[in-house]
Image (tube, rainbow, N blue to C red):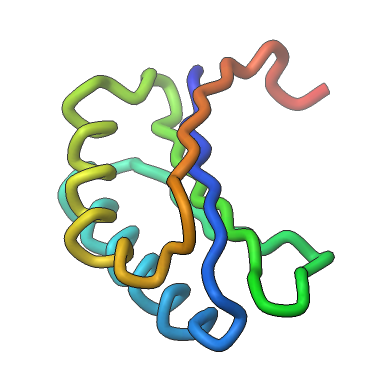
Length: 100
């Protein structure tokens, strides 16, 4: 199973607004793609003026396909981009072993 990770920085004073937008976006994605697992993480060591966030996406039993990845990026551009300071970095990883 592949998991999709997206990380980027937001200004510290915009953290709550950015997090609210991401969580709303992820809720809409879960409604559109049944079974989709999502998460939002924050790097604990924040810079004085910026915070690193990471969105996580997984679809148990299936790989995230190109349509879903494109929709994530399109929604992020429409709903979250205004708070992002710099690029969104997208990484995909495969799970080697479930549960060990």
